[in-house]
Length: 113
Image (cartoon, rainbow, N blue to C red; front, top):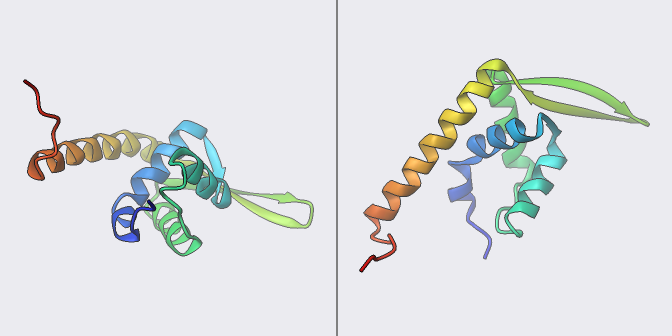
């Protein structure tokens, strides 16, 4: 099962921030492949979803970029700014709380006897 783009859209910035915090710096394709691998193909990020989110995070001052030339190609690496590092933990905590709340709301908490 591949998750809908509707579900992914609301979590994409959190995913990016968390990955960059763990990996220090990554380029776009690397992010898409890492997400795909970590989720056993359940989350497949498209360029059309990823790059606008990366650009928005950069515009918000949460990411910094550096460009490297790999042969004839240019590769743009993204890293967290100091503000991005702080926000990463907050976003992950917020999402964990949201998941817990949704489990309660939808009554899908494991039953204890």
